[in-house]
Length: 387
Image (cartoon, rainbow, N blue to C red; front, side, top):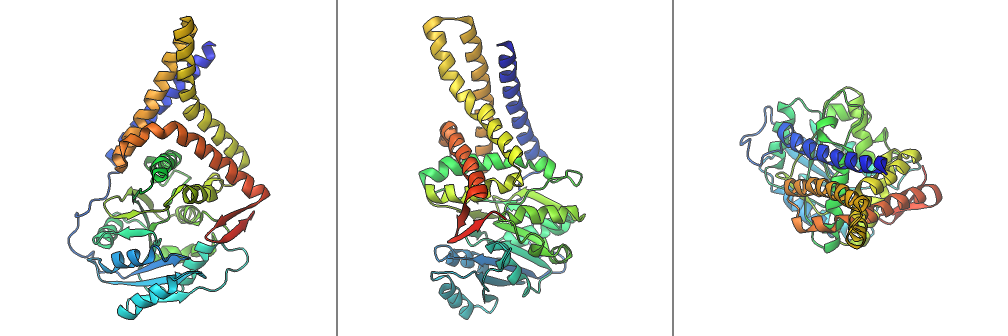
């Protein structure tokens, strides 16, 4: 019994450490600013913007309008229509007819061994002539100063692979419940304070906005090196870091926004497809992750009401000790979550849905693992079996 109480206090203290880590990240890896630079970067480098698009008629017009509104003019845009079954190509043709900087590429059929997004980006890269390549998702909206600020930031910091993280547009109830929790899980899995250090072996990438020096992308053979993975952005960042180039993750909420999903089914499907991949398809690691999440994040919320009920009905000292330990864990955990939501500009009231979101994410992790071994991941109308 004493051992269990000690472990509960250790867990609470680890959550306090996670709070301190978040504060230190804000101090030593501060967010990008919207108006730090007011002139083009030295040399006015050309940027090739590559936008993979499969069935993106809902998003592509907004994305292109934002790109064309940039206060930086030296860029070209390639939209790779990845075998879309909707009006994506038709919409892009309309924009291409009005602006010569936009080119529509009709994507070739998916080759054996490739995943869709990586294949689309690889085709776009064959046409790119810029000094920098910006990999941009169709569901993003970049702000007018995005190219100016990110180019300056990367050049000034001698960064080869810059990954700003977005402001999340959250429309539906389920987006607010699950996206806010999953993003905290991602930040815990890949703390910026560590992944931005050259000596740290792992790396993070979040795919909606990746600015890469083209010579660096070419040197690692780009997406051909990671063609097999559905988590191609993370693997590409790891390859670039392993090759000795500088990678950097930064809060880019002042630079662009994204609305990844619009309902419960999309959130579930979207994060399930990458959950096991984020663990490098390592089954023991995933088992530890599921157990760890349950014990450290879900169990405290169960401990408090159970211990509280026993204490109120029996008045026992043991129940009181468990209640206090449970409250310590829950308080530390929710402090971390509240602080992160403040930094990310998430609505704070959804902190209260944290316990429910834990169990949904555990379900996603288990489902992702089972689909990898016994089924297939479905995304954008394609099925990806075990690779």
